[in-house]
Image (cartoon, rainbow, N blue to C red):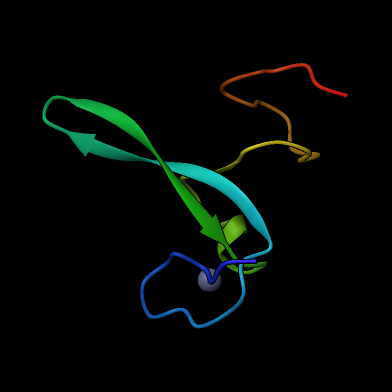
Length: 62
Ligand SMILES: [Zn+2]
C-alpha cells in the first residue's frame, strides 16, 4: 500500500479516496490515499467500501 498523501504524513495509507481541489472556479476531485488518521478528515471521501453515508458518487458494487 502507498503512503498517505497528506503532507508531512509518514504513515501508511489504508484507504483510497479523493478530496476536492479548487480548479479555477470549480472544484475538481483529486485521488489521494489516506491513513487511518487522515481518512477521517473533513473533505476526504473514501472511494468505496466505506460505511459512511452520503457518498457523493454512489456506485453500487458488490
Ligand atoms: Zn496521514
